[in-house]
Image (cartoon, rainbow, N blue to C red; front, top):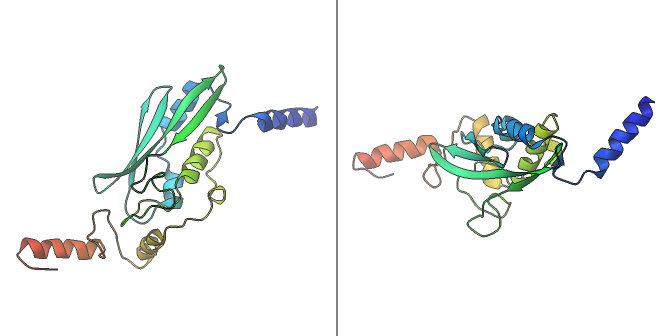
Length: 188
């Protein structure tokens, strides 16, 4: 009897289309809206301090805005659609990048990236993990491709700190020293 129930459950889950979760729309919204995505941030952060702020339109959309040093660096959202009373379809929306395509799609260049690229798979995995009540699994995301990100993450281990508003070619300390020198009439 238990085996039949397990087979029936796995068959139902196998038939569920991608992006559809077995939660009503209100529960899906509440789970996502309460989340600042700490597992994804830990796994994909590039070494600049970032803060994730969720905002939402109840039972319609949750948007996460990502800030560093008071500047918005990226935002992305999950659009929710009820499928009956017990399921919700979720579509992840990413903004356009400066070079076309999506922001943080792996083809964009950022002087001080907030996340290792591509970002979409990490967002999709984090949303799925939240809605399926399971841990975020970085193995489902794949490796990042952003070389600047790898340098920044490596800098953390050696004591170098980076900020989104660093001057080109400088870390946070060098940028601050340069700004101070300029304020006093000097050069960098």
